[in-house]
Image (cartoon, rainbow, N blue to C red; front, side, top):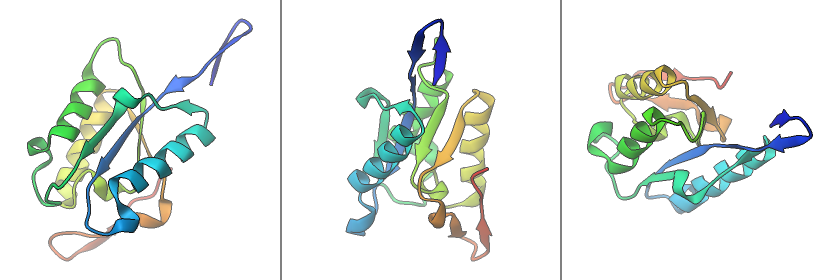
Length: 137
């Protein structure tokens, strides 16, 4: 939260969620987890900054998913409406490691910080069978 004089400004953040088959990881559950973490950290979550890709194959290239495309476009817009995006796990952007890194790179170049709400979900098995883990620092 930033303070200006005696006013405090609540920063807005974005959320990205991608559909999966397991009910405990539904898009709505992802969004609720991210909203809870964002509010705990002092962020406001406007509805127009919640981006989602429902029923999309996890191996589909990120530039073929409308939700993530809209998130990346919003990240580049001026004036920028947010500087932080929450996901419930790193692999929501994309399962293939190189695509996930590309999304992170594009967001980083736009000045956007990625925060992971569910830090226990960061161990990932890549499409090539190699495992990797990303830490939220």
